[in-house]
Structures are given as C-alpha cells and as structure tokens.
Length: 157
Image 1 (cartoon, rainbow, N blue to C red):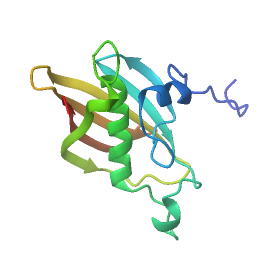
Image 2 (image 1 turned 90 degrees about the vertical axis):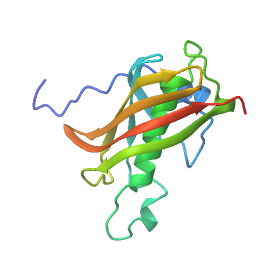
Image 3 (image 1 turned 90 degrees about the horizontal axis):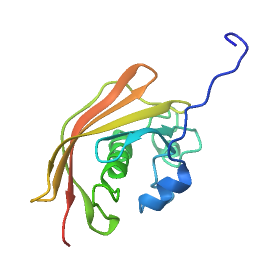
C-alpha cells in the first residue's frame, strides 16, 4: 500500500466516549482524543490531535500557532489520570488531583496539524499517602517535544 496515500489509523483502545466516562474534563479543557495503548495502573499512551480550530490558537499566537506548554502539560496530566482513575487502581475522579510537576522540559514547539502522542508511566505508588509519581513524555512523530515527572494525589477530600 506504500505510496498510495493510505495511512493506517492509530488503533483506539479507548475512544472519546470512554475517555469522557473516566475524566471529568469537558470542552474546552478535555485534551485527550484517544488512547492507543494502555495497561491499567501501569501506563497509557494517548493522543491529542492539535488542530487550527483549537481555541487557544487565536491568542497563542495570532501569526504563529504554537500549542502552549502548560496545555501540553495538562494533556499529559489527563493521560496520567486515565492510568490512575481505573477501578483496578481504586482511583475516583471526585478525589483525584494533579499535585505537582518536576523536571519539565519543552524540546520543540508543537503546532497546528501535529499529533501529540503522550506516554504516561507510573513509576511509584505510595498507597498509604495516596501519592503517585509518573513519568511523562510527549512526542510528535519520533521527536520528543515535552517531558516531566508528575505527582498525582488521591486525597480523602
């Protein structure tokens, strides 16, 4: 099929409706379109299709549409939420928080037309304190565009 203009789609192991069942976020703040690989309580790989119709582009920036770094980080945290907010892990969206972030680096600008591929991996879970540490990496094609360490908290309040 090579050269015939046909590209296989990313597989969907979790579509937008399933994502909406898990995450509380809604327009304009739900930043994950699909999950393409996933193991509950271990890791998830999600995608965000970055389009010129995204509501942040008119202001960031009118002449050069670049996805804001903070929104890349938010998209990554949401994919992290999909790992943690599973019955198998015992998380619930009523008491789940993005608690902190370390060592964030933005490697390349992400622009309209890019597909952001986000991999979030659980590296440490302290059930007693309700804290999870996750490693996040975001790619466009084969290029690493953003990375960081994320802290998630499941509090009683």
